[in-house]
Amino acid sequence: ARKVWQDSRTLWLLCCSTILIAVNWFVFIYAVGKGEVLQSSLGYFINPLVSALLGTLFLGERLRPWQLGSLFLAVCGVLYLSLHVGVFPWISLLLAFSFGTYGLLRKKAHVESLVGLTVETCLLGPLALGYLLWLQARGQAAFLAGVPWDNVLLPLAGVLTATPLLWFTMAARRLRLTTIGFLQYITPTLHFLLAVFVYGEVFSSTHLVSFVLIWTGLLLYSFDAVRANRQTRRRVKPEPSSA
Picture (cartoon, rainbow, N blue to C red):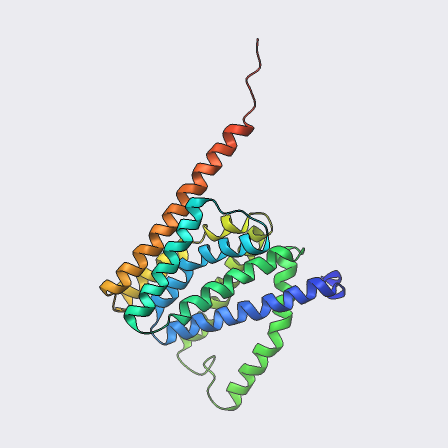
């Protein structure tokens, strides 16, 4: 960790990644508190496509025709939702681009996952602590001030947030950014199910059309990725030795 603090480039990248993950967490918590879990679901469905786009623009990862088509469908889904609902889905887009860019920066920062996360925590920790103390002084703090069960759930929420983030940063250094993006279907699917079946958010025909466009784009991209992977394996498969 000491080398990171002495490397200005890596430290700058981690400062930027810290800001991005803080924005991502804040917007997600805001969305849940405002009853916009469906928008958060849409954002994390868009995120793999944003990761693919960023990988193409900044890492030289090439998009094949089917993948370009999937990005086009995702853009159509966002535009359709914006035009018919009359509200720009800023929560969805901010979640998608903040986390997608976070993955890009962590891939470019040559630092071990645990070390990088430790540095990010050190950078963000004092600001978070200052904010909590400010809330405490105003009598608005939630920890140790409400239901006892909440005092257990709040620290556990931190663990459940940090652990997947650590695993994500480990994957970000080992995999293509496009591959990382498409390993994240589970999160938005769970958000979607919670929004509709647990929190009772309205899922209109407009939402259906928008989600179907994005889901179709994800399916096209996944199909193309699997097909390309199989072709690569066939090319590198060693020839059987002759007797």
